Length: 247
Image (cartoon, rainbow, N blue to C red; front, top):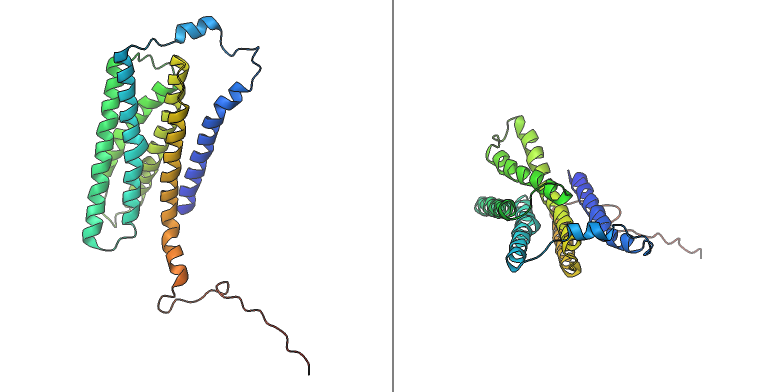
């Protein structure tokens, strides 16, 4: 499972790198060969009114707070609980995970409703189509969470895998769609989103580091301590044999 989690994050890192490098690749093309005609750009240009600008900003904030922040935090919370043995702390962490994820689901729903009511919804671009699929998965996930089988039942392992896969996949897909949304906003308004892209990337890197660091924290803390009858591996102490000199 750990190898699978690392593979998922490596895939996410690769996608983020590709997304971030795409503008650089496009800008390196021959400037005398525009990728789009001037007429097409004028047709796709979005006329921003103060009201529309506020609605777009609110939509972006709701989706960032939901998928780009709270959902990853909820994952980290439940991950911490795997190393907790105290029943009371475990219960607090579990309910904190549920509350955070439900708030994230409600915020994402509010952002989707805002987009449906106020934006053009032809679903002709990647951001809108991905958002539609993402919203369906966001509501399937808590339903699966509430229908979990009891421990000891054979279906429990299958349920856990599906719940874990969606729990990891939804934030990853959502993060990718946030990048797509930033790129779409730039294309439609010609406004720079470089600062927001850099800040969001920094946040994702920090969250991913915390997520992966949890696997190594206990191991690192044990390096300076020998617990009970714990055996020392041959690589822990390497003794160099020095041949005795002949007298």
